[in-house]
Length: 573
Image (cartoon, rainbow, N blue to C red; front, side):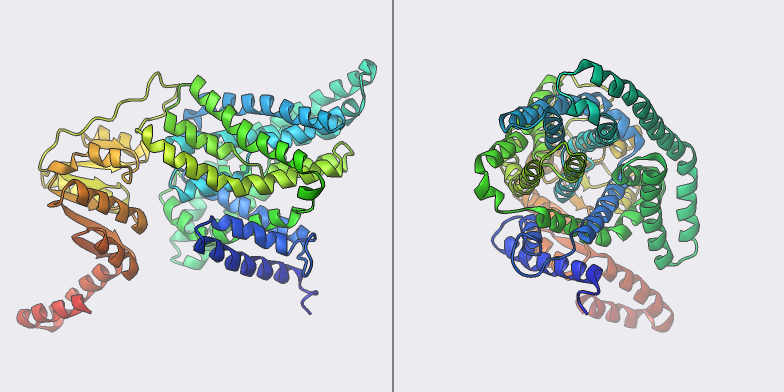
């Protein structure tokens, strides 16, 4: 019965094992990603016991990539993409052009053909979309300068790999011919037409999304939102993400990931983008876990015994040469040091496109099976090492960290962080739905205040309104110090992340013991957490909604004296 339902078996076994091993890894203060990967190894074909369906696992993982890229697109505008083109395009191109020959050199040392070396080198040159976005989201870096550059870099790599996948089959004659110029001429001429068609399809897809999708997609979502059905709204989000991704792949030859990203980016201009991101988050996380499980299923542990030195050389190219190259590019383009370190960390692994390239190379007879195994081993081990890499760079970044805005060209020098001259003022952290309403009320009341925000587009709007701002992550001690909290009157922490808000409250209390700190929470656990970290008042949305409703009910049902006696009982409940 179980074997007759491979889809259910694959999902259940993958998620259950990933949960158990992920929780165990977290218990020992290791990244849960390690647990997810080991879960895949356990249900893979290279370990004894139950073997899940690899084909189904890869398809489920692809849905995770689609939803993840759609979610990123919801936070990433076309303006953001164009703003980092000066570094994303040359950065990705330089890295591909320099890392690919390194992989080819290792292939030559192993005795492979030039074609095998090219496929192997390209597989090592491209980073994993899922791993990069997962790390950026966990560390709240998606909306920062480093996040925008890393995502732009990924998009350029995505387009380059789509072109490579198109050209490899038509250039197979050239790649399999050793030194025969006459045999090479025909494939070269035949390569131009597919290349032109591929570029035309990508341009057509982008044009249609910008001209037509920009109008249709937000209109559909707004129409569904007016029905008042949350179920239909959630379904509309999934239909848009999956439908555009699938249609882009079938009609234009664009990857699922790139299609989903553009769908999200178009929808980001809608007022419903935040709600769309929240509704898609649970499925996005679940399918992202299945991606890591599918990677673990492909890994053959015996390659560590059969050819350890080739594995070591492959991993060194991925986790040493690629980040070093990214650092060199960052220095050459005069990026801030902390941004350079983050980008270097996002380069230190390989993923989904590497598997696709290796699989195509194997099917074309270019890449030997040993090459595919090395690519998979490199992916598995680099994903395991990546959290350690980020932990090391996280310790280095505070020495260099300072806010800097990435504009439409390379910065000559990152602007210095200066301490605000305001005194007896109010500091508002976050300018989302809550923070913007608070800021408007403070402005109308004539109160002196400043805003700390990490979204560049929001910072620009506030500055146009004459409001003093500081761009950066408020959890950074340097950013908090720049707000001159030592001479401030009040601090309002309006961000929805309770864990990060606790860090901010603790640091703010150390800077000014008499500061009044007000924070928001979404659960009793967050209230307790914020209280323990120094917040004077924690406001939970559900309680305030209940209070307003009760006040309204008591206003009509009780005399004033009885109403005043009833409200304190409600607050203490």
